[in-house]
Amino acid sequence: MLHASRQALPPVRLLCLAIAATTSSLANAAFIEDSSASLTATNIYLNRDFRQFDGQNKREEWGQGLWLDMKSGYTEGTVGFGLDAMGLLGIKLDSDKKRAGTDLLPVQDDGGTPDEFSRLSATAKVKISATELRYGSHVPELPVVKASDSRLLPQVFEGGLLTSSELQGLTFTGGRLDKVIDRASTNSEKMLLNSKNRRFAGGVEADHLDLAGLDYQFAKGITGRYYFADLDDIYNQHFFGLLTSHQLGTGTLNSDVRYIVSRDSGAANAGKVDNQAFNAMLSYGLGSHKFGLGFQKMGGDTGYAYIDGSDPFLVNFVQINDFANADERSWQARYDYNFASVGVPGLTFMTRYIRGDDAQIAGSDDRGGEWERDIEFKYVVQNGPLKDLYVRVRNASFRSDFARDADENRIIVGYTLPIW
Image (cartoon, rainbow, N blue to C red; front, top):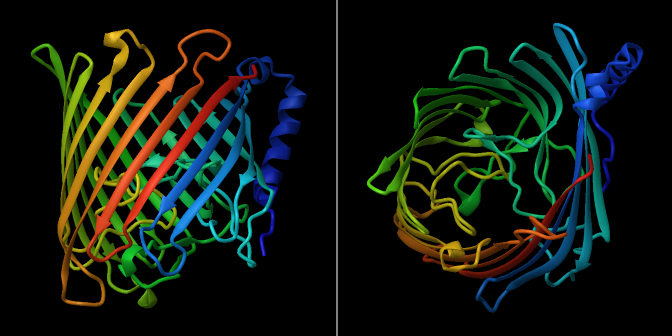
């Protein structure tokens, strides 16, 4: 049974009411003048064919997502208070019990999908100088927790996050997240350990995720990153990253190097977590062309550990697969092209090919390989009343020795309307 949860957590509601009362009494102009609101509409058709003749061999759905994002300014004074609100609505345009499960729409107990599902949440915020504390709903994009936003509605985490940029070039991020609302859900739930390809015990829950990290710009074009996270009684994780960007000849050379160490942290029912993930992406942009090479290697006794429903922070996590099984080694070749150089501004093309081998197949001593090929065209309207409306057409093929083969097509139309 699907139960709609349309209100924020009780502590958030109480804090928001207190802030609202405070700001109304202060009649603070900045709170209103610095506010903003936008409505993002995302229309997605998704068709995934598993290329098999038993069980559910196809998932195909079409839906419309609406995201109303409202942000206030801050009250004046040494300590500034603010309040943000987020309204999310997903609408079914086409679905069927035999084709459900794309994660565009929730799946009910009878296998059907609702005509619509929605969420409403608020985030209270406090700012002192260049330090901000936010408590409520978040769509984080961090190396240790990256919310998935590839469906109608984004995955939303609940809890508190603090960011501070008091020192030039240095940003600190820390906090605790204790609930998650998955992209095709309305329910606040505990966080689960992802168990793709039976890498870990299924259904293992955590009460919270603690995290802390630093981003530091050493020099122009060179940024270092370190993050630590602990998924309560399941695993802890250390992330080390280096981002560089420099002119090389008439083009630009970019690198993204990541090393993540994950270890289990006490829960007997979670099973062993022991992974060292090295991954890196090197790309060179020259005019309208961009060429990229990626490498990813899983070390340790298990595959990569991350929160279920979220996006793993790996360079070879692509449209369908993550290439993150125990001992797996994978390579990526990527090419991007911008058609502006031939008189079609707004049109871009991307294709990539990823091949993995030596993956340890869970539950056996066998090893396997897999590959994926992705193609994408995207067009963004450049001017006129529909300026910034975009259309994306994505196609992917995935083949594996141990997981289900799949062919997938997505058509995405999106537009963000500034309200004020």
